[in-house]
Image (cartoon, rainbow, N blue to C red; front, side, top):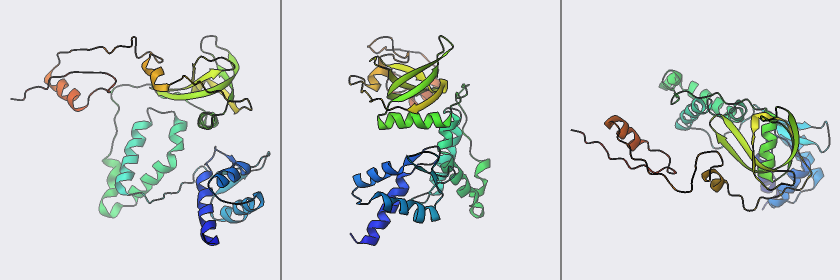
Length: 287
């Protein structure tokens, strides 16, 4: 591959690897990930790429308060590749309205650049009538719902990193049963969002049983140097289906036959319950 093309693809790969604030990635980790992707580059050349080239044209920030230095994008930065079209923008607007009442604000905040760009695109199309979208689009909840529990952004970022990178977490957690704070070494195994609360599933210290930790009760979380242990027999779907969150009381399905009005029958026929529940409905006869 010609040198100029190799450099271009290296720059594009670098931009994809660097997260937005509050995420950060060290220069050494960037170097390792570039080499994994086949780019032959040394640490000094990588530093020049970041400081002398990419930082001149993109809102890249270096956290040099402590070593190793870590890089991140300004939190407001977002790049659309490929460009967003009107249908995608409208879909994102609906998604924002719907998800705002279901997910913690910090999770919604991770998507805010996408949502903002969608609104800007639609607002810019006043000449063809699209500028009136805000008066024509709504997402309403199905009944009452609890507000999502607040969650610290840095804690969310660290938990996600630990889960996806198979790293242990040193965490201070507020116990609901004892109403005091405890410190654990956690081995993340899964993440579940249930109604207005999200849970980390993890083993604790040297124990093997899976425990649930509500994310909003974490008081501090940092990555630990302790070796991560895999719960080899843990299957997230089997855990949920087995009643881990109180949904199932027995291993057998329950057949429920109900006599409902034609209007309700049509509603359930068009928008059935999740496939984990088995319903048998007789469609109404329309005369």
